[in-house]
Image (cartoon, rainbow, N blue to C red):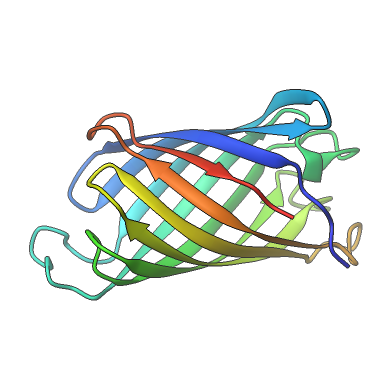
Length: 181
């Protein structure tokens, strides 16, 4: 079963705490019909499993991401009290980090009603990015979510679409625009 998802975009601020640890504060907005709205805001911690200063020629790079997401009228959370989500991912990138590369993202998330979650999903993302300039990247992405909770046991969401990232400098982070179907 495929669930259509509204077109969305987001902004992500990323701050490096050390060579291996970053904090990010992404938010997303969605257009549903003729209405637009902010759907969520997250606090992410990303821990690289390698030293980017010493492993400059590394072809395979991995990181662990853990997050806490605040939801405001999020389409996936409709009817579920818009409870915050917690989750994590293992992200592996293959290729040249300053050129073209592919990524694999395996994760899971659940709402904060941990004893009886209303929302619990396994996620998988596969993408390809090509760097056009030091600040502009384009690519394509496949992403799916499969429900693990009993309340939404038949829930499956599949997304395919383009990806555009623009990072003007080190402080702002990425702006991304995605269209899913």
